[in-house]
Length: 146
Image 1 (spheres, rainbow, N blue to C red):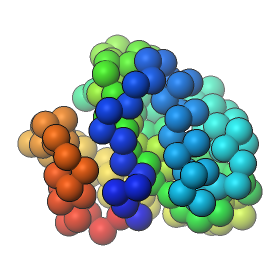
Image 2: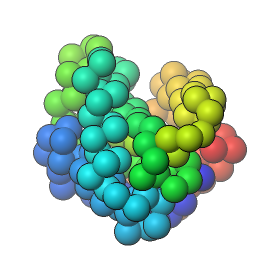
Image 3: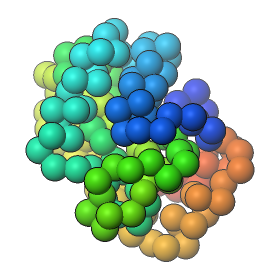
């Protein structure tokens, strides 16, 4: 699900909103969503419930909407964005998940579970932060089957 076209290693966005908007635009350009504004709105609605800044410098925003044509996982390496994370630390890595509105709730939960298990491991996170190429990121995730 995570392909080289859905990875941004030098995201210039400086706020949570800018990161979400830039990833939604990327999903649109790659044909994963037909309305990036609706995708952003779905992600922000979820974000309003509580922050998806899960700690360890990681955020996993996600949304469910009919504008999303197929399940999508996007990744952006960012520069210390304030995400109002649970540990009050800035975010360095953002994984944004989108699933079609009519899909069962299990799709994004399965992606979240696989991602979260890996991100709990300090060695995995450090390898992610140290990745200097898209190929490095893809290699790291190849074992996850996401």
